[in-house]
Length: 390
Ligand code: PLP
Image (cartoon, rainbow, N blue to C red; front, side):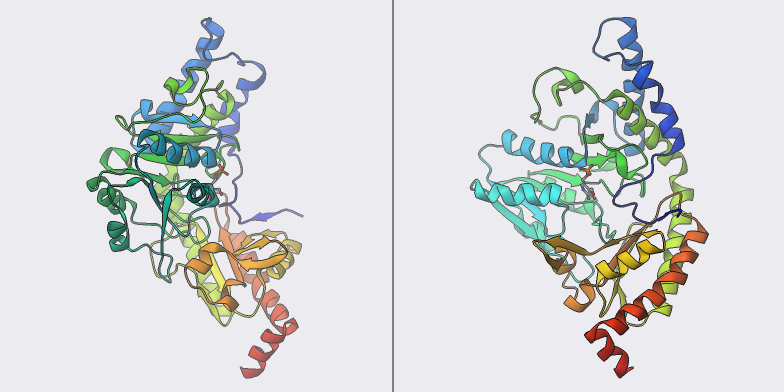
């Protein structure tokens, strides 16, 4: 069965152009970029080129780009650095809907005596900037807010948030893992101090990430040892993946406008048709700014896991809004923070599209999902009650 892959916020296919670019750096050009000889030097040149390509996509300078192993590492490194830079400051601000790469770290900090403020979101998953402004004080070391949410695609007003935070003298970090390559970013005109991205969300391989660190931002490395990455991240570079990351950023930059327009049209068509064909649905984050590729749709009186299994039988890959913790199917922390009613949160499905998504794949979901929902509603007691009232 050929897969219909609509789970691109989880991970993406490596683009053929990206794969071809990295291929020689395993068995032929395997030198260490730190070596003095020509064989390492030619790899160093390609790593520099990759750094330039990442910088170009972000509107940044090449020396502001630090290669890491993943988005999680970049998030951890940014927050830890701020706490080391300002040992006297004991307050951190984040939001309730962050990815665990930020949220778990912040919650762990409370056990070490830090004060952590988790900002609320409204019913659309949007931030209240007044709440942010009121929360920052002289004790705040860093504010870490995501650019775009992985579950709903909701885009936060990050530039305004950065301005508020900078005026009050704290550092500002954003987890832009889901935003980079999907919407334009320009660090040259921004107040962001640090920004995280991850290769496998933009058609590069798993195991490579980037932390952007603005020139002049005080920084303490998480990994110490060699002098790689100008002393900001020790460890021999993952050269093939770094070169792939550079290519992925170049491809994203060249085609972003055209691709995001096409993807948005596909996503909007999927949303329109599903809401017309399936009664009692709501779009999580539908009333605010969203990434062009993400659709989180809540369907009342059904369970996400059941929907995913039946979709999977048809070859359709999506994901649900529940996290299976200790045997109970709890709705995700994101949907709970948004106050999505329990009966909806349980039946929330995320479709996330990419440059490789086709019209025919969207047609297939529009054909397969409505009968799956009717079938599941007939099987569940709540669903039967709901159908009887109709
Ligand atoms: N931040 C966000 C918003 C994400 O969606 C993810 C991955 O799903 C991460 C961070 C973690 O990135 P990585 O898988 O590269 O560690």
